[in-house]
Each structure stands twice: as structure tokens, then as C-alpha cells.
Image: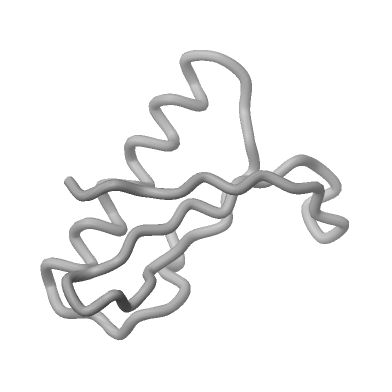
Length: 69
């Protein structure tokens, strides 16, 4: 798995704190997902699942941009 960025902010759409998790491929193209933040162990499990999905999308050659999880 490559490195990732985790940028948090409040989302009026979700009415909660969200995280924009993103990764880039070898060409610098960005893949990202926006997910609600949870506390503790549940968040780490959710984050890891989203990062795996982003990594899989990169390896599969998907179009850069938002990846719906």
C-alpha cells in the first residue's frame, strides 16, 4: 500500500466530521473517498478498508477521482 492523506472537516451533507482519504498512483493522479469519521477501533478498521479499496482501484487502473466505497 502506498502512502495516503487524511484530511478531516465537517460535512453539512453528512452532518458529521468526515475524512477525505486519498492516494496517488505513479503518475501523481489522485484517487479519494470521503467517509464519516468513527471513534476508536471501528474507525481504524473502516479507514483500512477504504485504503485497501483505493489501492485496489489504483492497481486495477481505474479512472482517477472519487472512488465510491
